[in-house]
Image (cartoon, rainbow, N blue to C red; front, side, top):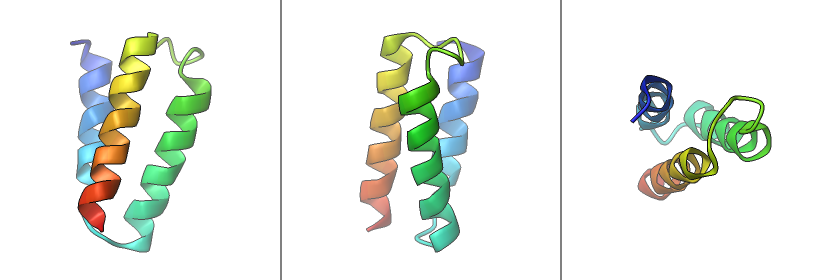
Length: 62
């Protein structure tokens, strides 16, 4: 796994509190990765990994 992908996943996993801040952070990360993944140099597989991690983190906050 690329180092940058590990760092992105760590950021996502750090949003582990059910606060408005963490929810907003996850929403912004979702938009960033779903819209700007090519500009960030991510592969489609890496994008899917990040999106799935975000959705998983959202489900843990509920």
